[in-house]
Length: 256
Image (cartoon, rainbow, N blue to C red; front, side, top):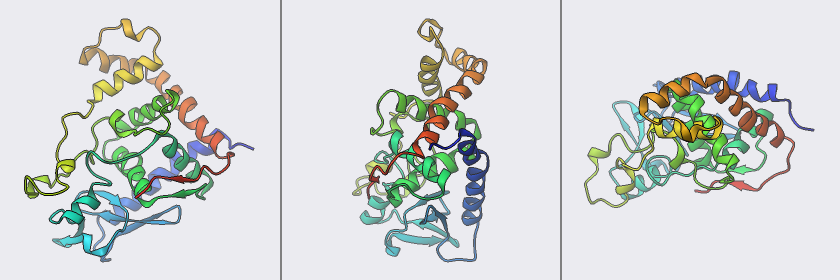
């Protein structure tokens, strides 16, 4: 028996805001040495300087700076570890993200979810949407488009708009030729918000290929078709998650 879509909407309307509150609390906590959040039975440690979460990893990979916890980028192991959640080697799949949403609906993991995958999910769907709420509809729509296009197990990140985790905001502290440093630096290949919006509009709006594609036109069309985009998210994300809650285990999502 599949879950009613209204139960899925409760995740977006209630659970995600609650998770954002938990993350904010951990980000600003000064009471614990290792600020963290719990999600689906997994502990994710908070990098208070960068404003993101990661798996716990080895304690030696973490530092404290002015009373705030952060992943060290002054060693090759630290940069390698940081690269799982920041930079060009992050990895999320559309199928995996929808499966995590389904697990959040039921409150129980449907399969083994790696800490790294869950951390990347939180950074995109919880933290990014909180820090930049104007991106939330776009991120969910991109998820729906990539799932519908059949790229269910391909990397979602190249299709997403600019994110907080695209590169290490502390990259200037890393020596230029240091090991595992290239993946943490700014990458010019990142899609713009306008490019992401255009890709979604081409999927949602009939005859979009015949519309002008200037930046102002894309922004205007996005606002004009907001209702259709919301409906697209409902049918290609919310309804899919509702159906997944009745499906069997898929195995393991993500790897460290």
